[in-house]
Amino acid sequence: MRVIDLSLPIADGMPVYPGDPEVKVKVAHTYECHTWELRQLSMGSHTGTHVDAPSHMHPGAATLDELPLERFFGASRVVRLEDPAWPAGRGLFFAESVGLEILDRLAVLRPPFVGGELSEQLERALLGIGIVTYTGLQGLDRLPDGTDFMFYGFPLRIVSGDGSPVRAVAVVEDEPA
Image 1 (cartoon, one colour):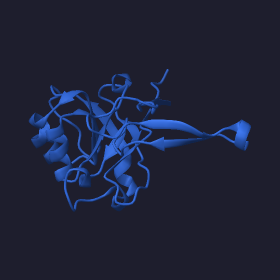
Image 2: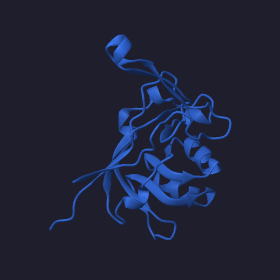
Image 3: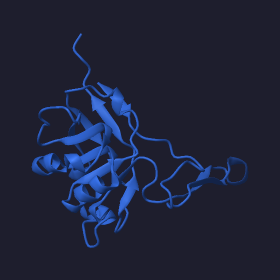
C-alpha cells in the first residue's frame, strides 16, 4: 500500500483566503534557552488543507465537535464531471474545479464528505445539507482513477469548531505484480 499526503505545509506567512487571519509560526522556546523547542501558532481555522463543518456557513448547524469521527474518513474516490456515474457510499474528490452544476448529483448520492477545488456556492450548499467539505488539498492528481482508496482527514477537536486544518492522507492499495 502507498500513503499519499494530500496536505499543504503550514508555514509562517503562507497564503490565506482574502480576509482570513495571517499565518504566524514563531519559535517560542529554543533548546539553548529552555532545553526543548516549541513553536507558537497563530492562524485561522480554515488555514491550508482543512475541513469545513456545516456551522462554517450555517448558523446553528453542526460543529466539528458535534460530528462523529466517522464523518472524517472512509472509502473514497476521485471522480470527474464527465464520468457517467459516481459511486454511492463513499467520499468524493474532484481534481478539477467544480461548482453548483454538480449539486443535484451530490445531493442524491449524499457522500459523507466532498473535497477538491469547490466553489464557495457549492461549498455553502453542501454544508447546508450536512455534507462535510475538504479544501486546500494538493496532489489529487496522484490518486488512481476509477479506484477506491481510504481517505483520512481528522480535524483538531475544537469546541464549537467551524473548521480545522487537517493532515489529509490517502491510502492506496498497490497494484498486484
